[in-house]
Amino acid sequence: LGRIHNGRQAVEAFAAARDAGFDNVGIDLIHSLPGQTCAHWERDLDRARELHPEHLSVYGLALEEGTPFALLNEEGRLPLPDEEVSVAMYEKTTEILVAAGYEQYEIANFARPGFRSRHNSGYWERRSYLGFGAGAHSYLRGHGHGRRFSNAVQAEEYLRLLFSDTLPTAESRTLSRDEAMAEFLFLGLRTTEGVRLKHFRDEFSVSFQDVFGSASADLFEVGLLEERHGFLRLTPKGRILSNQVFVRFL
Image (cartoon, rainbow, N blue to C red; front, side, top):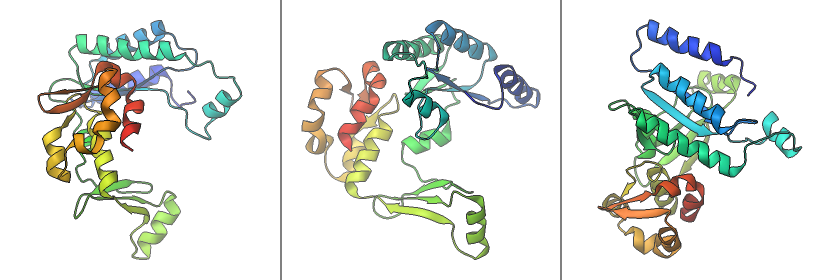
């Protein structure tokens, strides 16, 4: 993957954290890597499970524009698993980790009871947060539907602005009502609990059905979305195809 450490060093880092007394340690894993098979992935999951971390974030590989992997892929020189294999890896993740006692509380996040990430949960629930440092992002509810802003990316520019008694804000955007409604849905639907429809109505003074009923009707028909006990949520099939669901609300 082009990382500066290898698998052995990752395990050693985990052990060092335990030896230092940390009782809450998380692991990030990536599947759908070049040349990776389901058997490879199951071995990775088994090795991670043996370490007994409190939290695991498990993502499929995303090719970012301008990276070496993206360029190799454009040239046809990146042997990525096909879509069916990637789906099988995702399904195997849920099967193995849930059987090992982890709660899947979001599309890609698993935790032992009591160890859900408070930061991540706050993000999906659109709670206010502040980011400090070059390139950090923040969100403040305040008045209206909230404001998102980010700091200067380059450390030199970030420091220059601070030392001139200026907030190092690079970009700032106040959300419109439509943007906030979309965020409410595609962030909340990432969680396994889903979106409480009463909260949507309380926040925007309109029902989900009134705004998105026609745009989402076929998502219910094909089994990607479901409504139960006042919650709107993705089905297991919907989690696999979540991006196709979220785009309906943008």
